[in-house]
Image (cartoon, rainbow, N blue to C red; front, side, top):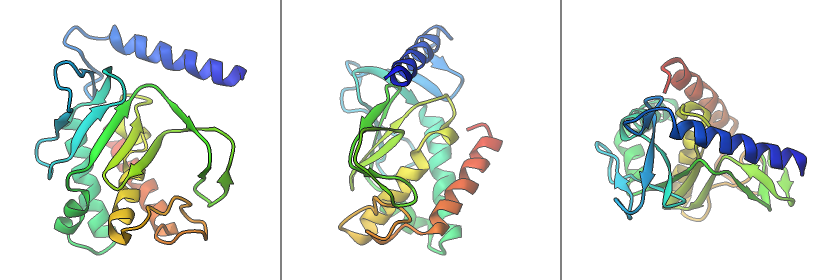
Length: 198
């Protein structure tokens, strides 16, 4: 309980610090404020096949379109190269996706960890594949590499390829799709984003 309270205090401090950083409402170049009264349906990231960004709460934070476009474009290129598929095919698997972002964390029960262990109790999550058309991603820092964006994009590719699930148990045996190669791909991809400060 104390650690959960501390986590919420730290998140609140982070959100407050974002709110006081700049007068142009863009923070650390990758994060900006979002208000649903100006754009209730969210907005499409330019240069993508209809990938839309929205927020959990009316007043929340988002990664900027420029940062998201760069990160997703790099993801598509690297995924295509790593898994020997055409980039166009990867873009098509992401077409029309909605990415819901929030600086406020979530906890959920009945989920799997990366090793396939089933966790019944409520645990904090940094991202969720909510359906084959919607993912949720927490903004923990201004850097996309530290978010679960790429992780959730892999789930969506698996879900849209298989049609029935996103392989929620990752490298576990209950579902098929996610392999150790996916885990390695994500480690390498995040390091690449980190090096580029995205």
